[in-house]
Image 1 (cartoon, rainbow, N blue to C red):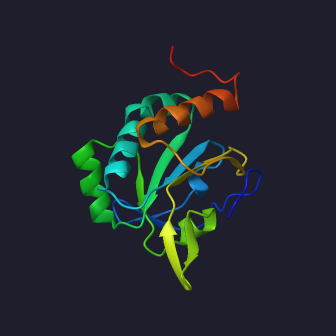
Image 2: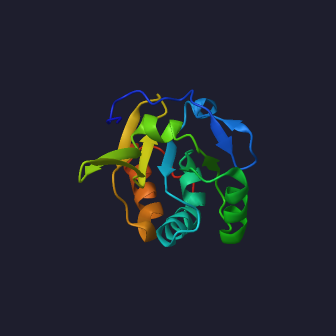
Length: 163
């Protein structure tokens, strides 16, 4: 699991919603908000995506990019983006490579068995490629606002580009 200050794994490849290879490397030099979620149509995941969607213009004004990642296939992401008017990229990580590298896929022991699960979490990557903030838990309805508040506080001198 990564911690604040750790170098983010920018070179791992997953698939975007069109089925093309994607990585974080092209976003170096910008804030990247990477949020992990279990599946496209679960109630909390819909609320979270809509919350981020509703403030996406503000996130862009800070020069940041937001990317949602789940194990769902690209076709499911395309349908989800269309159905809910999602205005930011969604990536498919069926092998859990990116999720495990960032600590979003976890294991627990229960009654002698080991179970894996995807913990909804968000990581803010600083423009220098280090982890700047980790949200271990979030409130789906206001997660977008939490991201904007972080960006505002991360560099108070940075203009919000709202003018």
